[in-house]
Figure 1: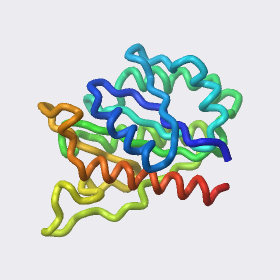
Figure 2: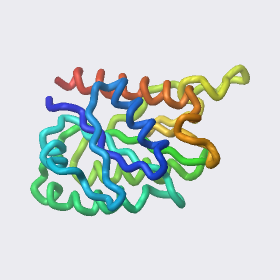
Figure 3: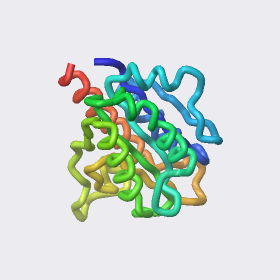
Figure 4: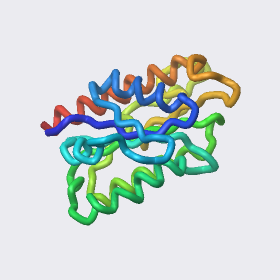
Amino acid sequence: MGPIEIVFHSGYGHTKRVADAVAEGSGGALIELGQDGELPEGGWDRLDRAGMIVFGAPTYMGGPSWQFKKFADASSKPWFGQQWKDKLAAGFTNSASMNGDKHSTLHYFITLAMQHGMLWTGTGLMPANSKASTRNDINYVASFAGLMTTSPADASPDEMVEGDLATARAFGARLKAVSVARG
């Protein structure tokens, strides 16, 4: 099994913080898309060698950022050669609102993974959904298909909710465990 590669775009730094936390939990490596949606040098080769590819982007207007979409469209070349077939896949997104239609972004990632013949991995996390739950609990946003985090529109990346970052690290640990189990 190859390494875990986390390919993501971050518009204002919040999604990068989430990517960092997922990498911390998974031991994965980051591949940050540029502000023009391009992979850095060697990015395609790293994705081809990966055993798991984790997609990440902010949710803007109910879907991933255009920079991520540009990358996804450019992935038609590895798609044509079935280069990502049977790799593990997962995804995460952040938006300013508690819901913010983040599920649409995760479904976009799932569809992209399915088109590539990849195997999707969800969070495996129980939600924090009791009256005693607080915003700092693991999986307070209660997502199963992939990781969802929320950053208020007027909060800097340094002001992100610690519970969301802890959830990102737990999600990363799950991805590592699934990757190791697949061997």
